[in-house]
Length: 253
Image (cartoon, rainbow, N blue to C red; front, side, top):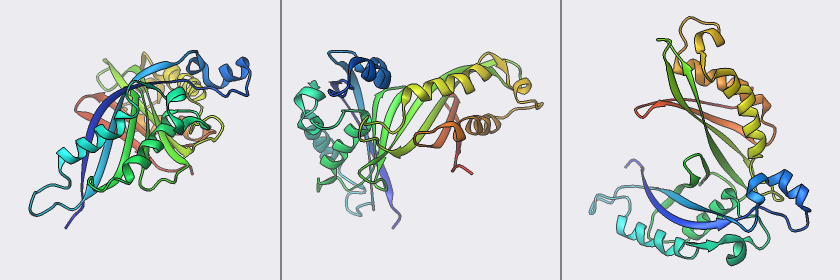
């Protein structure tokens, strides 16, 4: 029988702070920006867990949703409304970044016997930033996705809003706890994408009569792929409306 995937979402709240105690304030602030600000900052996290398996012929389900929700609630109860730096032993020797936190949650869920096979775990700090680990990732690998927004005119020369999701995958830096420097990524996207396309006619910017969403996704990929120095660009997702998405993915040539 074919394998089917099921995804369950659940929310909880926690606080964290990015810092290296052996660094001075200037170095911490240069590396972590506002995430270094004391005492900590909180998030309403959204955890999305995808499990896979064959459909049980008796129940018609991959996994009992009641069991999956119960396990998720049991796991996140330990972290809910906690300061990850001060209250959680998992972060005594590593920064509680979303990437590191996602791996902690994966390890706790992977040993559960009642929820099928883990496929993907996505941990969203907010709607603009999330970390993701999969069954194919090693313990030191993750992906991070950041959302950016701009307005640009397409075929009808009418401006439209574009959500641009940039995904970078790679090894989690053991010192910073991050796959890529988000501040550096922000500056790169601002300089190469937002400044170039925002409030512009895409046909003029890209020098072609009709610019499709596919064209734009490919152009953004080409602007960013070779310029990301920490981690590897793996996906560009463009969302001009709630019912339409364009994606570009691949590897650096």
